Length: 191
Ligand code: GLN
Image 1: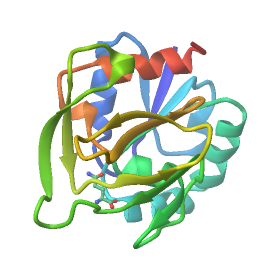
Image 2: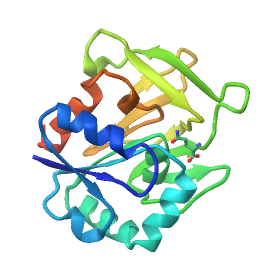
Image 3: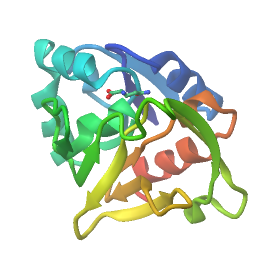
Image 4: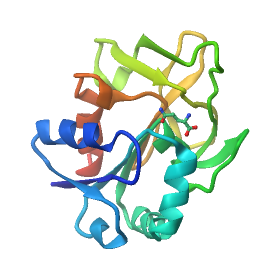
């Protein structure tokens, strides 16, 4: 199975490394033709304004949206989740509009810029997942058809799935817990 990682800006190298540890072919994607033959695409964290602008500059916005319509699985983390959202509140950026979610950028404010907290993610089993949040967004609203995968203790939604699309407000690639990437590979292979 071949998985691409959008490598325009942000934490793409870490995703490539995790995917390789899981034994799949992982390639950096910077051009539309590099989407050919992929079963899945990871959109990393970073700065959504920059990632969104470069996607437009490199003609990737349309190319990814089209491939996603044709069944490409997509996994966005943090800024990647922002560019997958149908709606972005606050400072919006052009997005792929793949998932029927409304996200808020930099939602935790300056006081809690970054934090780490164990998350219960039932689809991954009982052991909590280490949630690493860095100037993170959260999901304010999910439409029907979106499955909530994880919430903070106060109820805030921080991970969701809609069919072949997976999004997390946090950074699984910065931990040594491989379960979310493995879960994405299951989605990409049609499970
Ligand atoms: N704050 C960033 C944004 O709004 C996201 C941060 C991240 O990806 N770690 O794009």
